[in-house]
Image (cartoon, rainbow, N blue to C red; front, side):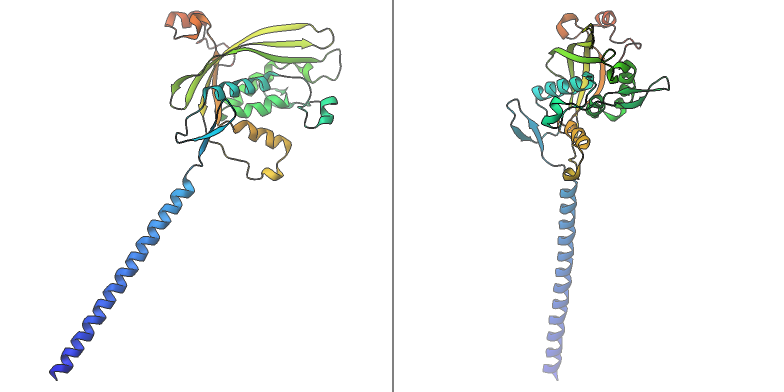
Length: 274
């Protein structure tokens, strides 16, 4: 009888230990699944590696998402502003045939601050995606107001073109993490096609630029030419969020309050001031 009781107690102890071990194993597996789920979610939310284009055209991965090469910033400024203010009345050529016979630019209607609508060139509209969204709408209205209707005229005696000639783009000055101030000295040249008469307007601006994320076109294979052009603007991972008048005093160094007043950089009536 005593042996039978000892055998039952021993069996009960083994079953209890097995139950505890099984429960502990289940808890361990559950914790492992929770840990794995958290890691997978972190990977899904992690931004892709940021690549910065160097001067020699090579791309290098960087750990700082706000890092940009100074020369890449200058090239972005030049490319965006030239596309914004070069108005030829024709669409950018997409094929060899279009180089010899370009398509006419019908323009894109933009609502102005006066409540009406005026056309801007297609290249200006595409280049505007290099601006921040809050700044883009107001800037496009200003572009529409200064774009001559003759740019879209098919009458040779009335046709007009515009070209931005950049004389200098100053080295970017870092004003905050991921933000730079870039000065640009240029002339906006408007030319009549019929007699080659020109109107030259100084276009000296301070551009505030910041680093942004870039998301590739999810349907790149089915994208139209216009969509590809828009997405290509964002590949630089930069955007212009403010444009001010540039003060050329003191060789673009830090200016005191008196010099700023003299330059008029804080005058609210100036164009392109957000």
